[in-house]
Image (cartoon, rainbow, N blue to C red; front, side, top):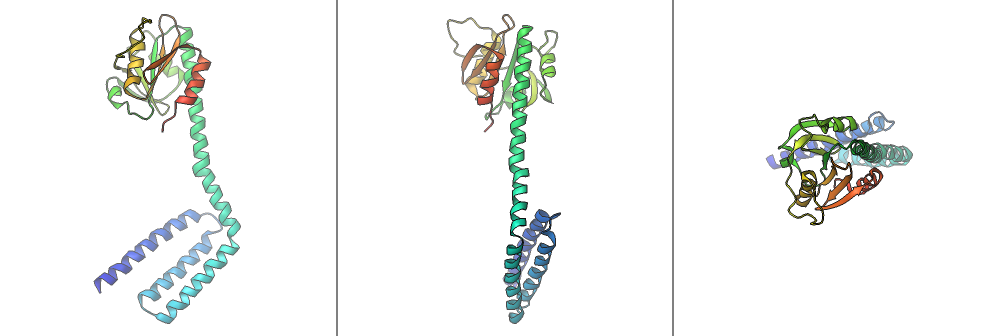
Length: 249
């Protein structure tokens, strides 16, 4: 007797959960009243099944079958429209919003780098992708603020106590500043490079991050990825490269 009782409890629990989710999904639409009526039929059918009323059980099952079939025929356009609207808002719109945010971030970052370059203010910006940079963020000062060109510029001003370290960005937010990065183990022998460039290459040797380096001496912009450096690139080129490379998987 107990296993049978538990079986009914489980069935009722599952039906209640899915019924509740269905009512939440259609709340505020013309489907709400028909679905709520359908729930009443489900309850009646379940009670008949639990009380082993064979004749009534057959009757309620027939009612359910007819009711569901009728509602599907009558409300087919409404169901399709409601489903497509929710798909648009929860999937397509969210994806477009994320894409717009990423594009704006890249444009703001390129603008900030262009300003730093013109003023010959040295900078090192690391963009986290798949590999976590948590170990490196812990070497600096926590910022945890949304990115803006003004904030980045203020961090790398010569009088700033954080200007010698690296800024680490995760999902369009500045996570930490003044971070210490590993220096590159192998660099091109023909180039005499400073600590910022070596650190930019070094972090990309150990992770899949992107590192933007702005030279304090020349103001030129470079981009490191996978241990290799694209030297002396324009702000427009930087923007195009970031649109291709800066994607978190």
